[in-house]
Image (cartoon, rainbow, N blue to C red; front, side, top):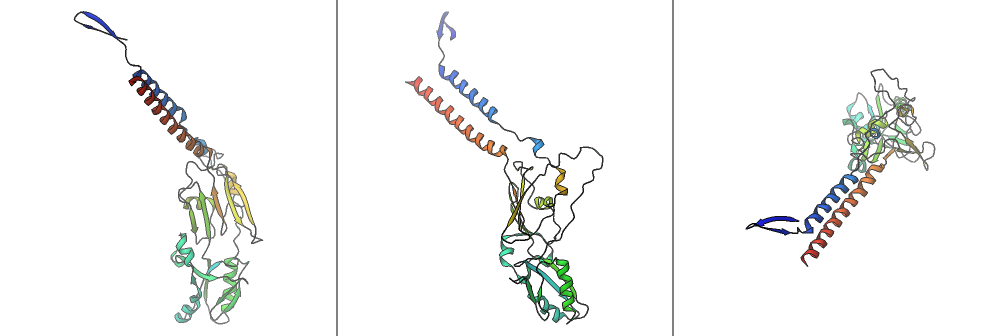
Length: 288
């Protein structure tokens, strides 16, 4: 009710209920947005929470590193250097390019492996090196394969220098990371944390206490091993899965916060639509 005076005559006029209804709807909407806003618990996105936040030194015991062995269908870079440049060129001509990998993978490597070239290990676990012949290198580490190839090449060359590396040491990081992709690395000694760093770290919605690692069967090519790892605990450093193997797949699961935030956004849109529809109904009812 509004009171006003015209020519010393007091009059009263009732205000429209539209304004009060509008204020109520706006207030309801703001309250709904505030109520539906979700936050990510900062404690859940920090790593290794069980390491004391002090200046005291903490000793972390790493597992014994075990070099991966060469399998059939692996691409192995083999370099043999001799005093004769022509012979050296011929020996290294067997390193064929892997176009499918270089086109579909992110390469983080040195210049010698940047084109993903190497000898393809055949079904018998052998590689055929010009002049030297066929050599079985499957089930050997790169260090063991290097010694075997060097010994075989001594039958043809004197003081040859041999280098053997994985050319397709590929790992895959998918899920709630900033840069999910396949990665080829020249260094066999790569850890889970380094792989996550290559993928740009986890997003705030990544479940850090339940990282899934899927590993190709080491004893059986038709099997895989799945294990869950916890980035919130320092026990990761002593896990036998701390060091990665070729073809490892790392999957970061989405936590409940992202699922809840998606549902809340839908609820906000429903709230807006309902409020706007209610306002239109009130306005039209007043006009009529």
